Length: 497
Image (cartoon, rainbow, N blue to C red; front, side, top):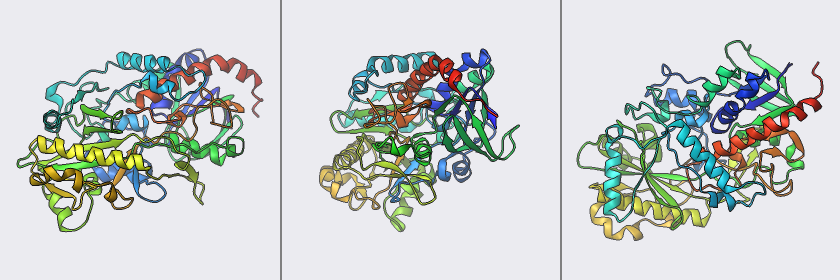
């Protein structure tokens, strides 16, 4: 058994932010530990090998799904979490949306300001045209012709050389995730980081960590104690830890209200080769969340992911893949809302899984987004477009006048169409008290002042944008409270044998 002052479980947007914010405690002599289930991702490990990278850096080897197998859940399991495997999109939350969560003591203006400061401090910038792939130019061109107003986004990248394989780990170390910014600062201050170590059980001021291999830590189960433990392992893993720990009895909302921003990839075929796989993949968006509940973005979809995202089988499927050098990729993401039935539960082996069903409004948003994506692609010069909720899925230019009829909510059926999601949110939401949520506005678990949460599970609802900056801003507030509360918590902590 080893004793620490603060243990942080997870190193992604939440955990990495907490680790950096607690660096002054480490400098002052406090023992701060970060536990990460995945490995360290170095430039030498990043390579355009889809199967090997998915196995090494993603939960479930990149093949994790909702309970019914209808939605693929791509969550990073590596030092830095999903921030190490991202395109670096930096879109901050709206204070008005945060205020709409109605969490006492959580001012939206504070979260918005913290996120904006993080963007400035990290040096996020609008990408130079030379670093973008042609897919971005076609997206902007097609969106304007379709009557939309595409918005260029700032990116948390530095020294991007356009490798185009952000989701496999940047080979140029250009993505400014927590593995590149917050965690090195924390480590320099004395915060200890252990990788390939999974928190498997939690009890008051104690966590059991199962280590497979890390420098200096022998394989096996380690019992760690601390007066303050911060869970930041992501909405699924954090909620699963709490459920296994028996917290559901006192917290009836534990596990409920999960959102995941379900998404489709629409694939458009052009008459000539385009540079989809070379250059930064995502720099624009068309934000229709307020009007229609969806966001459109260009994206890079590698061959394996492209194949998985195509609806149908056989020769038609093969024909689309054969045209891969000429394919333009567009992602349609719906903004879903927290619902009781969408939740994290434990399976018969005690592992956390997501139980999720598309609401009619989300299905309608996905259909509206696919219609818009088809118009954008045809506006950019595509000769045909593969749309999941169309029958048949491949639409030619002569079908443009029939898009509303051919792309139908009646075809948006679980199991028929391919859906994916990144960074599920909710499950341990902030709230007024233990009957309507899991933590207060500073991540303190109701009834367990020694336990904090600092990841996307805190969100009572969708922020309506890429959630990374929202999670980081919330985590920074959690870290502030940890620093303030630690003297009292340490004074009350039991002695360790």
